[in-house]
Image (cartoon, rainbow, N blue to C red; front, side):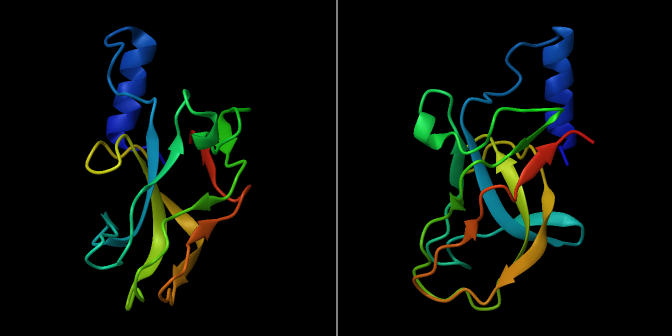
Length: 139
């Protein structure tokens, strides 16, 4: 689901109100869960070694992890592999993924529930969202 900020930016682009609402060139995926209805992204303090994963950059083909859009949606063509955990992520349950405009901070563009939660992540584990399992579409 696109956030209100992303929807407004897309509408500004489509209507010519603003041609530079966001820099959509480089996109990162973050993982987390909901708390009180709000997305809470993992942090390195809670999940040692956690970093957002860059999933798109038109100038670097190796960072283009999604197929070209078709019928208003895109699907990841490649595995999305996050950084290796440096220690066990005790008590962490990942239930949601979000796209952002920066590796830290930036604007959150989307928020979607995973089809199944991820937990029990030990040390030296790489969290992977398999190819073909992440679809982004307009609702």
